[in-house]
Amino acid sequence: MVTGSIAAMAYGEPRLTTDIDVVIVLSEDTISGIVAGFDATEFYVPPREVMVIEGRRQLHGHFNLIHVATALKADLYPAGVDPLHRWALKNRQAITVGTERVWVAPPEYVILRKLQYLRDGASDKHRADIRAMLESLGERLDRGTLLNEIEAVGLAREWASIGSGPKSAEAPAVQERDPLFREAAKICIQNQQGSTSLLQRKLKVGYGRAARIIDQLHLAGVLGPPDASKPRDVLAGLEDLDRICGPK
Image (cartoon, rainbow, N blue to C red; front, side):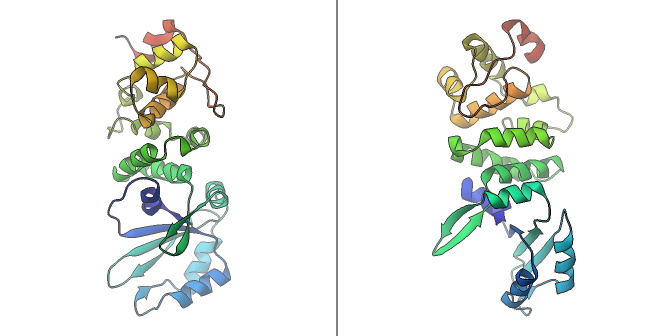
């Protein structure tokens, strides 16, 4: 199952990369196929025993295949017992490349992994990848599942930063909110519901920006969690705006 930058490009927009990330279910047959399929005179292939050891790891297994002449690299991640890997493999999506069918990780998984890379100090290219995916996918993205996982693994700060560009690690969360955050909160409270369509209509913004504001309102306690396709419940009143948003 392809993930990482290649998957992000499949869902978003193209950019230059020299590697491909692949999550695999590693068995003895798979290892034999790797050894037989990559000529050792053209590719670096780790010793069989290394692949066996990495495949036995319950979490964080990893090894590389490298094309010697070009330095193009494949990073292979054995699924192990990682629940996110297992969920992604179950929900992978097929795309056609030329005459071949390629299995690609679901977009929610790709975004979660890129948020983890951001948390760990990786390049801001991951933030750009996520923005492109959000704009391209629109309502095809399962935002309920995505937001629940973001909260479960502690990536709310990184998610909030997606709507406003690179920020210092010390920047307070309120500075990471969309400039229309307060106006959006007021609109939701006055209409006693929160939805991307409401904000698109009232604020004249695109789907991607409206969806990010909805998520920010949820994290701030203005709106409740997603409930399928229903508008979100409003949890705050107009009297709470200064406390939540800061004074005007």
